Image 1 (cartoon, rainbow, N blue to C red):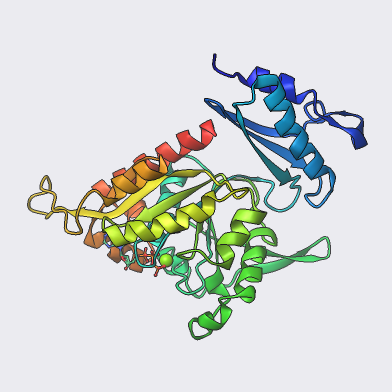
Image 2 (image 1 turned 180 degrees about the vertical axis):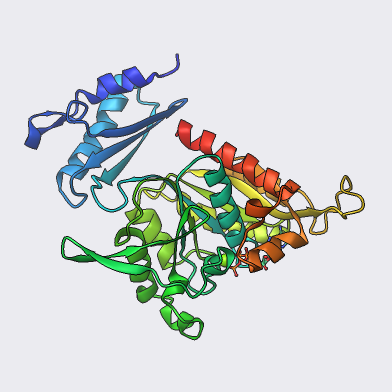
Length: 345
Ligand SMILES: Nc1ncnc2c1ncn2[C@@H]1O[C@H](COP(=O)(O)OP(=O)(O)OP(=O)(O)O)[C@@H](O)[C@H]1O
Ligand SMILES: [Mg+2]
């Protein structure tokens, strides 16, 4: 028989937080329960993650669920900090990741943000790519300077805004010639500031354009923030898929379990203007599907190669903003799928 949420909740009522003299359900510490077959995932909110009680409750949850629901269940406990901070108004943080540069991560991030916003969501975009910050150009806010206000004695950044989307970029603070120097801890602390010392307000989605590959910022993001899910961007080439596989595995490591929402295949094919029904698979076919299969996720969409994508990106108006093309329709579709997926998580 399938395990029900109620059974899990009932079992969790047996887990007592001694310091507070009550069980973790009554204490409203359960943020989320998801059940897939015999795999149970429980997200538990703690006031502080460095409290010794985190480990005790972690073990007790695993033990109790196995006792009550059977030794063959696998239990994944994700402790998260009670976040009353600046990101508490952000419902879903979505990381857009790729294995290598130049596959269209920024293009996807920008157009996805716009498609989500067109569907009626409040959206922000954070450009975390130190080496190639391109979100400011794509949103026509290049050279902009976010203002800083003081709140509770702390400086807080106010994101810029265009097309109703809140925008912050590492590019507002790093000069291109300094980018290489910025790769390590400086970039990391800048990233943390953009995340938490900024006034994101209430958002349905915060889309993060991540640097390619697996570096410091990726680890910081996975370890310190409550990410709803990651979207993988790749091109149809086998090598690109191999690189993105490596990046995906990092996000899936033990304890970093960030749900992988799916693959977006960019530059999937080319259709000539005079024969729009014809598809030329210039970079090949199939690598994204086998990647998705292997990771047990879906291909969320395929974006064709389209000159207007570059043109509109360069002029500060991503294609989804200005054009009712097949590319726009695909991004609207993808946004809908992502919304459905996060609703189910
Ligand atoms: N579907 C597409 N059709 C045509 N051009 C595209 C498409 N997707 C991206 N491009 C172009 O390819 C280039 C690289 O895209 P983009 O900057 O989005 O990639 P990226 O993965 O963010 O790269 P980087 O690693 O440099 O940050 C840009 O000039 C962009 O306009
Ligand atoms: Mg980019």
